Amino acid sequence: LGTQLLHDRSNHLRYVTVDRWTDIEAYRAFRTRFAEAYEALDRQCKGLTTHEAPLGEYVEAAPA
Figure 1 (cartoon, rainbow, N blue to C red):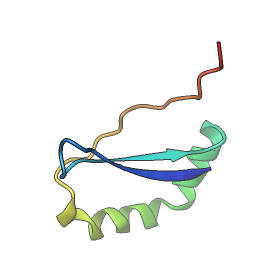
Figure 2 (tube, rainbow, N blue to C red; figure 1 turned 90 degrees about the horizontal axis):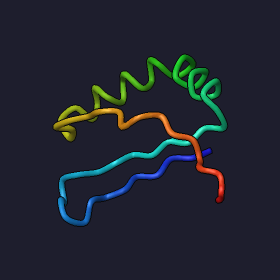
Figure 3 (cartoon, one colour; figure 1 turned 180 degrees about the horizontal axis):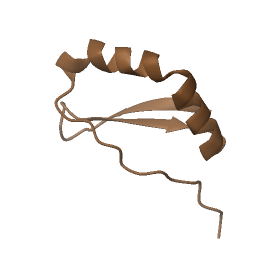
Figure 4 (tube, helix red, strand yellow; figure 1 turned 90 degrees about the vertical axis):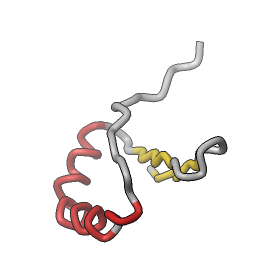
């Protein structure tokens, strides 16, 4: 569904990437299909990254 790159206002070195898919199956299929490309991108950006960690898997909250 898309990707957002968010920049921390209080820490100019911190960014968060938010990737969105329709469901977990779509995410898994994407990761399988593009595994090599993701690894290549991680290698290419290694000098720009000091720490990378998944923040979890989330679903959109239903309105109350």
